[in-house]
Length: 194
Image: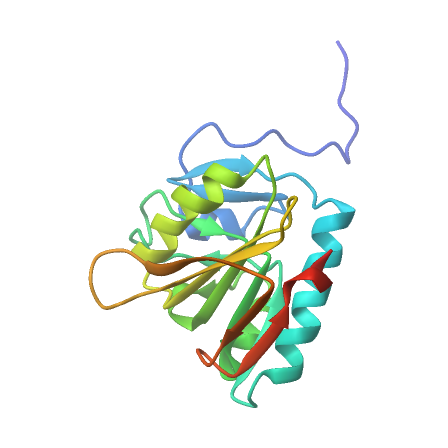
């Protein structure tokens, strides 16, 4: 008989998890989709660089009542407390300042209703998930704005917003300079992200 070392992590649960059960896992390095743990790959150096540049640009323009956070878990609030849940970890989020503290308390997650803007940095491996799956989930969760930043051959951004009806609307792909006043004034040279 062979004994496992004491510090060996336990295998992932074989049943669907609620958001509460997900928060009890020790930094699972994953997201929760309909109660299933979905392992997420580590960001590439290019993803990290783009995320840092976006964080600096957003933080430099963000009003005092909003904060920019990177890679924090967000309960999408798409299921009841005892039902299989949804937790995503956007590359960046802009949240109301009073909600920021949730991200640092053990067992407590930011909620979709705390998020003003979710941003995903799209890679070839995540293109379908970012453009279709997360776009639908974030819209269903009521997150008012979702930006998809593609750092491929031609850096681009797709800025989605909730027009008050089903799903997100967007004005298409932006390359070169991205300018917006929503949720705050920002002008971003997309070439600086790579």
